[in-house]
Image (tube, rainbow over all chains, first blue to last red; front, side, top):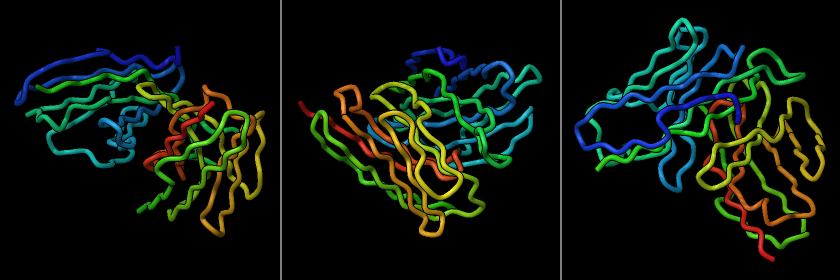
Length: 118
Length: 105
């Protein structure tokens, strides 16, 4: 158990629908990151939050949105789902890398949420 | 922006040594991270280099040359369980496409 909790583990839904994925970071970690990994593809960075504020944005579609709540858990909302949105969605939280400069963070990933859009 | 280049696939024999290269172009460099990801599982942290040179950690070592925008991950005494994807991440947030390593008996 990495300490990062993601729910649900599996989700099957239909095109056009909306889903919410949830992530609880490790205790003490203030940053949360979301990634998308399609079959046999690399990890695509979507978005990062730090202590409730958006910190960095990657390849996140306009149909997707996220937020981090005061208790530091985060939710990723995916709407108007398309077949191509089927993927593993990972959440990670971070702690500073030992001996590294400010901003160098080791990511700890959750087990992922597997989304299938039919 | 950030460009990260890794070989897509590599194959090696159990007990051998393999070197996985990563070249990158990035702004605001604050260290380079390597992660391991078994198929269908979450990535896990392997190593971090912030200064030039070699960092050794058991069977795994990682090298960094900041001036050349180059890093490699060296895996020694390969085991079947090392079959996985290895992800390079300059700055630690955005990842390369990963190198899928297959270890054969």
